[in-house]
Length: 145
Image 1 (cartoon, rainbow, N blue to C red):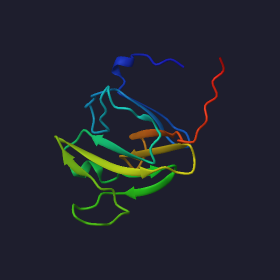
Image 2 (cartoon, rainbow, N blue to C red):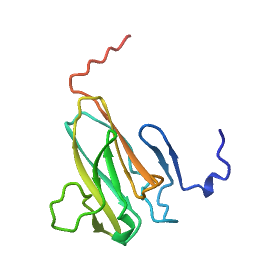
Image 3 (cartoon, rainbow, N blue to C red):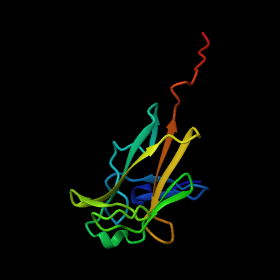
Image 4 (spheres, one colour):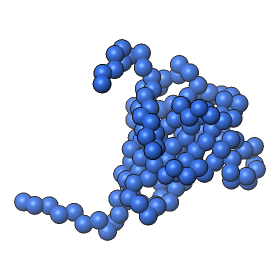
């Protein structure tokens, strides 16, 4: 498969069990997730938790009314909650530097890999996925010389 006119493409999503996404850094052509060239969407960690942050290139909270976020195919929030409320079923968002962000801490699951993703729309087209490789501190590496 070839992608023609790649300079005109800002986002690609591979629809699988969990969405796999590719983003053009610093693209603001439509309200969507915003990444920079230094952002890591695939993370290897030996820690027992990780903080993930989704940035959206909009100033309007209304643009996130249909947000839904998932951890390993399980939805953990949908819609937005009002500031200062504790409804954990709604996604916590806040304005930061002219954008809106959602930030969550995740604990290491029993499986080695974790897929953490949010959609901005009901059609589940605008997505951003973090893939976390939870390298265990007890992993044994065999090196042959």
